[in-house]
Image 1: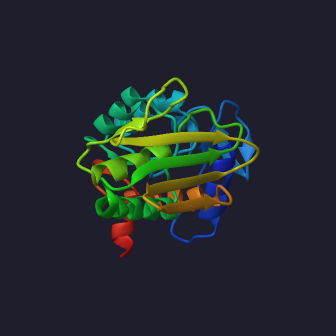
Image 2 (image 1 turned 135 degrees about the horizontal axis):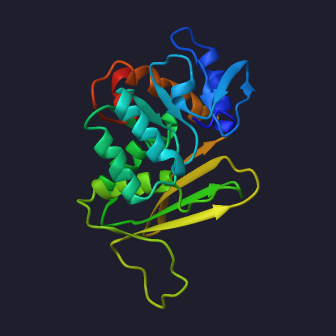
Length: 246
């Protein structure tokens, strides 16, 4: 879904380099041809396929889930910016069909989340924690879903005692010990950069990830699709793929 977008183009390129999967077509508002692939407005109008990779936008979620639930089709959701209500719908759908949902499809970002979680276990209570994310000036949602994913990973290692602080400009007070600061930067063509900062007394530890292109997310999405095609109903994320690769 969303085959005319930049991420979808990278997904097509990634799939073409493999011999265990292929793209049969895509959806868009316009019935055109992309990379010699048929493009239709509805999933039901495409040639037979085994799995859907969603590269569109959150507005298409209801239509996507309706189709997948009615046909039993597994779905990889590679879109971000969902509301809490929409995430609840995704989780509910996973009770009936295989659903792959991750705030970030990059293997590196998911490794960063694991490292941040380990660091939080060792440093929690002694270090202040801040998360800074940077993206291009066309990104709509803030903070990024990946920043929230990283924050959730850190908080899970700290018994969920911490809360997210998104904005301090209106507060005239010292930093709360139990907060995780979230900061969003938008500019230029930054693909995606994330820093998890542990600031202690006289020392700072920073864990960072930088994406140079959307290719890293596309490779992850295709890996997710190949993985998901073998699974039964349930909710899966990149940690499941990492586990299979071990």
